[in-house]
Amino acid sequence: MLHVLGPTELNPPLDGPVEWEDAETGERMEIDGGPDAQDAYRKALHRWLDALPARCAALGVRYLPAWTHHPLPDLLEDLRRAAILQGGRGAS
Image 1: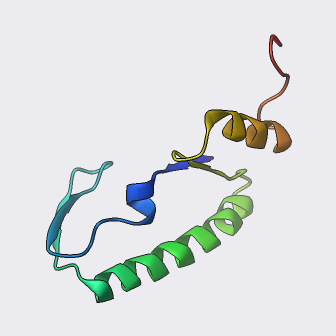
Image 2: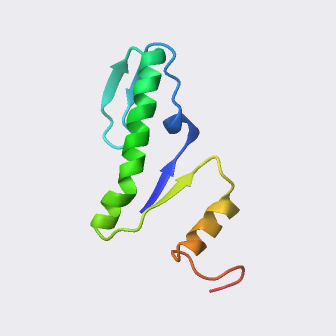
């Protein structure tokens, strides 16, 4: 599984009331925001991200995070190292 995450997902703007929309379901949710919400989100996200590789492995799925704020060549190298992508420039 190539798991794509961007800066806003990793550190969302929760300094005040916000309305979030789930990109996959379209469900909307209102959040009060503030330092406590930021801290709770960050902790929950890290627990989830820490558990995800083991969950994928238990299902026989390879897991590789892909951060949108990292350069594409770095992602391609990570894919090669994980033996998900083979070859190099000009390979077919």
